[in-house]
Image 1: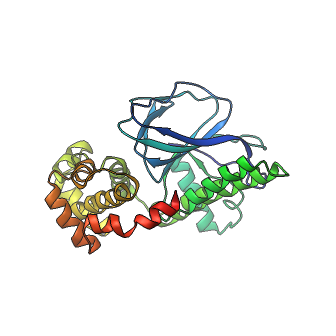
Image 2: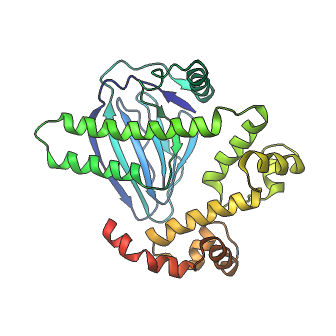
Image 3: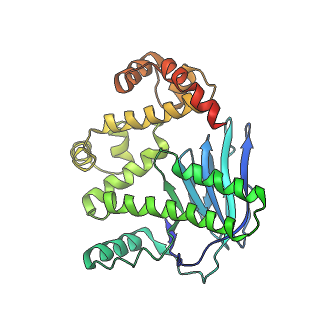
Length: 299
């Protein structure tokens, strides 16, 4: 995965933005742009490839499409799709691309050598990332688009709103890197790769045997190292991902309980309801009803 770290003492230049909505079978056009594009998933999933690297944009994930690099939709979307988009440019020179290991090493150097300003002076534009579910990034994105529609007295207001959004994303990446990746060694590097795969493929075969074959490691080794690295067994980790996805679908879609169960990787909707209640202390239907008012307010 690629990253750019431009100087954050200069605001980003907002070009245009909006909210794409599709009922079914959307395919992102193949193109190469001279601007950056920031995508943020709201509903459904979009499969998109950039520079021969495939990605899946789902709720609470983001992607940066880089200028001069071809990107295209690899498969039609299924069902409703919604994501926020924004074209922008840098107002300072564009730095060189860095790989993930290089960014992690840079963070390591910052912490070890206590050079506090090193990473405080950059935006972290990552090709792809996962964000917390608390919604602050989404709120800043909607705020940016609202400000852009209002035609403020100064165009710099929009530029600074965009810059704040990207700084928030950068902050989340930095916090995640410090917490999850700085101390990774060769052993938990493999676990990191597995957890990243699980984030967007939790509804597929996530059995211990299946993952062992996919990532070429012994099941017993995977079981012990996964629990040691994440603090929980693989089955519980996958279950929590699936329940988190189910909670989003309960609030943001009109799918039935059985449809949500199947979409999130459960083969039996009765088992899904049992697991949901055990983890959330309420049934899926009660959860959906309890947050109905909040859902309406957000619209």
